[in-house]
Length: 286
Image (cartoon, rainbow, N blue to C red; front, side):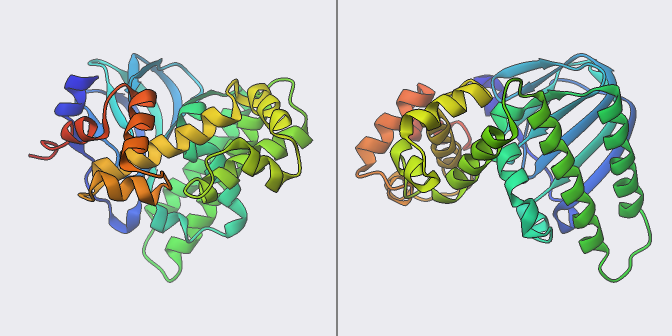
């Protein structure tokens, strides 16, 4: 994927930080890589081919969803074909949605790699397709007062439904454990800068660090520390890609004691130094 990163294009700006498209037999023109400026949801009715998201490859099949977070790199293989909806939204648009849905967004997008591809039942796909169709029609309707707020309400419902599907796909996890897991992901999204240790989150949740790690392994197959580190790496990558701030400033913002500690942590988790990672993106958009 290094070659793809070097030649990646930034996604074009969209009006009001929101758009939705309905594709009928969309064909990929070629292996062009894009660095997403917005969060994206792909609801696939049917299709063939492959999609690369960062360094992972996924098969495009019928009745599935792809959740791709801002900052991730995507490309379709040549000849990839699918029908369905493509929904893109920025954080400023999401802020129009009631705060009660924030937990769902955190679970689905803050650690997007854990939810990158979701297979749907025919019933769930039909239900979501109806919601996407309604939002698509609203998006293309004549302008009126509070139209953006109405679309944000539709998006909230869609996110809640997807989060519920995601929870249902997690086998062997009861509703209480599922809620604890969601609470942990939400806490990471708001406290990753100040808290790097599992015990800090466990104390906030009123459980032991061991219990929290057992819970996350049961829910997503990863330890609690792995999820915290993934959030830190994701935020570090965004800082290195989308800002010109010195590495030491990013390190201190993420609450590392020194730039050296941050560099060691980053390289251990990505196999590349922060400086070298940033250099991968200097030619993007040129």
